[in-house]
Amino acid sequence: MEGWQLRMRTLVAASVAALGLLALTGGPAAGGDAPTERASACTAKQQKQRQQAIAAYRKRMPKDRARYFRKHSSKKKRAVFVKKQQAHLKALRRALARCSKTPVKPAPVKPAPEADLSLTISAAGINQVTYTLTVRNAGPGASSETSLSDSLPAALTFVEVRTTQGTCVGGAAVVCGLGSIPSGAGVTVTVVAWTHGGTSTNSAVVGSATHDPQPGNNGASANFMVRLPPASTGPPCSPSLARGPLISIGHPSTYTEGATDYNVFVRPAGTVRTLMLFVDFSDAPATETTAAGYDHVAPATSAWFSDMSGGRVSLQVDRHDSWVRMPHPSTFYGLSTGAYSDQYVREAIAAADPTVDFTPYEIVYILPSAGAAISGGQSPYAFGSGGLVTAERALRHVTYVGPTYREPWVLEHETLHHFGLPDLYDFDPTGGSARHVDGWDIMSRPLAALFAWHEWKLGWIDPSAIRCLAAPGQLEETLTPVTRPGGVKAVVIPTDASHAYVVEARQPVGRDAAICDSGVLVYTVDATVWSGSGPIRLKAAPSATNPTLLGRCGLLYNAPFDVGPGEVAAFHDGNLTVEVLFTSGEEYRIRVTRA
Image (cartoon, rainbow, N blue to C red):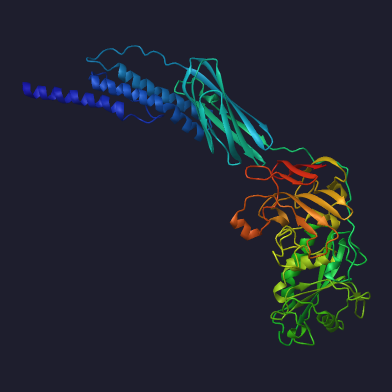
């Protein structure tokens, strides 16, 4: 009987010790139910383990709190979480206090020290934003192991961080160890970040190993929006460049960046009526309806002109409903390599003349059947001083394209020739035909819309949207990108009667959606240079190159100047300096200095 009683006492003692150790090592995570245990004796080893558990939990508390605060912004949830942490710590301390050789009545628990921390954030700047994070301790005790965490939003790029106490590391998140902050004292953390515009919200949280009686003020946020000065109200200007001497009327070299002679060219205003004429050949008979060819090209072309001109031009494209058979096979005209045949144009008009009334049409488009031996596109042709005479009128503006060029961008490009714009690609392919402006204007290749200078030349930008710096001085202006509505579109710096610099802003929106970069373009305009010889030449920013974007958008895809990490913000050329000061993400503030 005595042996059985001894064995039972041993088993009970082991169970009680195990219960105490379970409360020590297997207690709930922060925020769970507080551990409980019955009063019991424990060994010196168990007492040391409980002391170590308390120390480890106190060290873990601020990290758990910071992690929870980042996920939960509710002040109520934060306060509940902090109370659960404190209850768990008190339970561990009570367990330690009850640990003795013999069961004793627990001694009164001394109140834990408290430190009421608070955090405020302010923001200042335009594109480089300085956030000032101020941590204060209202006491009554000092805060220990104080930490601050600031997770920067995606719109911000970290630049640097400074602190008046402790150490900080920065990146996508800024984390600071601020040490102990005495009651009544504070620490200031300065975070510098970059934003390219728009609105961003930056939030941060502070915590410590010391109990905080008011955890609801441990987090703070600051909203920031980039705001630029508005565009100036003037004075507007109407720049015009003197062109060089004319060559032959109708030759592509007639087009320059000088003032347009609308006795020769079609005025791009109001309703411009055009005719789409379809021709086929004995060696390439038509296999589709005229409606199919028309629908593929005409509606999109008309929409482009309405959009780009801001409704100033309505390009009305009529369709001749029947195929017109040419008197010779397509190979007869020698157009398979993109050459020009006056005979082809004359015979196409003559073949259609008996059934077509050309009276209302200013431009005629000739589209051949699929499979015809015709390449490229050509326009316009004035056919001598008298034009191309039909039964009703003399035609002066005719465009023809090959079967593979029956695309909207081709008709847009060729129609702009009829309006007086020159080719911006180089007729000499040595060094790359698009080397002067690449894809930044449809008169070079079909990637973007039009330069602001071309829109001005066509009359699609009002004088109120142009600024000039015609003499030495300095001008600051806010530019709105060409394809966004409103605002100032360009600053023109004439250097003599036939030459000028132009500064404008571009972004991948609207008809510029396909461009690969945004910012401020600087280019020269030379009215003495003929079409196909580089009358406009970009002054590209010497920016780093992305091979993928290079392949998609060409050598000059990154020509814009801009502000921000990795960008080039200033252009210098002799007596001219153009600086990009700020950007809102939709507009650009620039300074132009002419010495």
